[in-house]
Length: 216
Ligand SMILES: C[S@@+](CC[C@H](N)C(=O)[O-])C[C@H]1O[C@@H](n2cnc3c(N)ncnc32)[C@H](O)[C@@H]1O
Image 1 (tube, rainbow, N blue to C red):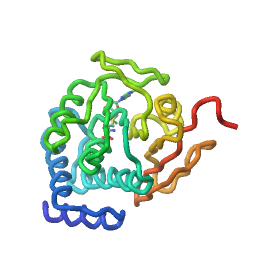
Image 2: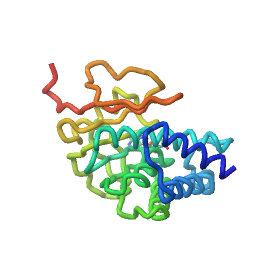
Image 3: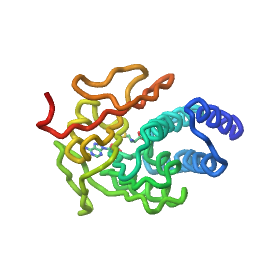
């Protein structure tokens, strides 16, 4: 089973143009083990019946990594509703230089994320408890959320249109907002495409953030 998963992940990385090292592969396998082991008790993911389903989530997160690499994203990355760990844990595993902030309101999930980040050698990534609602930061643990992000993601949390509206005030001008779309779907009307990485089931799509009041 492990060998199958390794082969699938290696092949997916090759298809995505990502160079996989043994160290990076090990980290992906640690993330998978972690989610398999803690998933149910910490309420991390829906039922993942097959190992291949977990691989599919990892591969979708790798599409986000590939998007970040193609657009040469560096600096501060915000992941909202990090919950079960995608894409945040895979970004943390792969892009060691990213300054990552993970937002999650549910305590069990937030603690699990901290544990997983420690296991993959990224205790520097911050997990803060709270919600982004109506573009306002509503902290649960009192943590501040500083604006000016270079990139942001939120998988399975908001509709694409709402996600763009929620996060725009938190972005640098022309920061990259990552959308998780069904394969081949177009970006919401009025948004400017930065790049896209299409997979069989899902597409990781970047749009540039445009400060409010500066559109057409
Ligand atoms: C379906 S889960 C997706 C988790 C993760 N992104 C993944 O795909 O593995 C949605 C997560 O978003 C969190 N969430 C929901 N509304 C939120 C909000 N307004 N701000 C921040 N997090 C939110 C939930 O607590 C939950 O953990």
